[in-house]
Length: 300
Image (cartoon, rainbow, N blue to C red; front, top):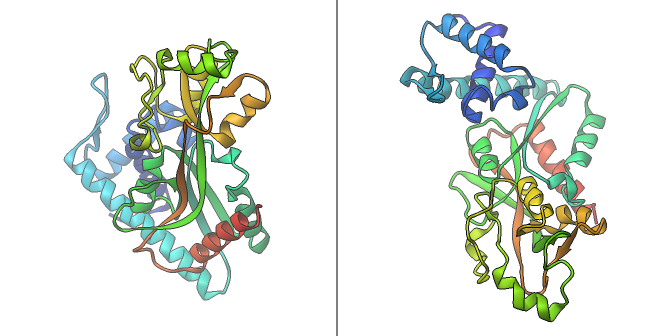
C-alpha cells in the first residue's frame, strides 16, 4: 500500500493506543475523545485490511497482525523522523520534533531544566515541534528504547542494556505525614513510639523500593502508582508515605504535611538524562542533550 499523510496520523494514534494500553487510556495523551480514537482505529483497520486489536468488556488486546503492525509502525515513524532531521541538517538548520519523556512531578524540581532547554531551542529555531510525555519511571526508559521519545528524564538504579544514562543530580526522598494524622502534632519521643503503628503507603511506582528496609508498617491497605496518588493518601491524614522533597515542599510550606525524622527516613535516587545507544546522531538530538545539560548545570 502507498503511505499518505493520513496513514501516518492513524499510525501515530494506533501506537499511542498500544502504549497506553487501550482507547480510554490514550485520550489524555492524544487530547481527543474516545469516540474519535475509535473511529481512527477503525479507519486504520479498513485501510490495512486487518483486525489490529480486540476491544470490549474483556479489555484491550492486540491481535498477532496488530503486534506486527505496531512494531512496523514504530520503525516507520522513526524513519520519518530521521528523514526530516537529515534534510534539516543538510540545510544547517534545526528542524523536526523533539520528543521528551519525563517522570511525574519533575516540573516541581528547580533542577529539572526541561523548560529552560525548550526555551533555548525555540530561540535557535522556530521550526522545532515539542512533544512532552509525562509518565511512570519505567515507561520513560521504554519510550526511549522503542524510539517514541528522543530523550528521557528519569530515575533508575538498574540500567537497561541499550540505553545511555547521563547523571544529572540525586533526588532526595523523605517520609511524610498529613495534618490530620496523629503523628503530625506529636513530639519527637512520642512520635518514635507511635511510628511503628502508622500504615505506610505501598507504591508500585516506588522509585527505589528495594532500599527501603525501614522496618515500618506496610499493610498494603493503601496503594498508589504515582507521586500524586501518594500525596492524596498522605493528605487524607490516614497514612504516611515517601515523596520527593521538591514535590512535598508545597504542602509542607502550607502546613499540610510534615516530614518525619528526615535524618533517618530518607533515601536518594539518581536522576539521569536517558537516550538510546543506538540513536542516529543528528543536530536536533545533540541540541536537546546539550540544552538539557546546560540548563541543569546553570540552575544552581
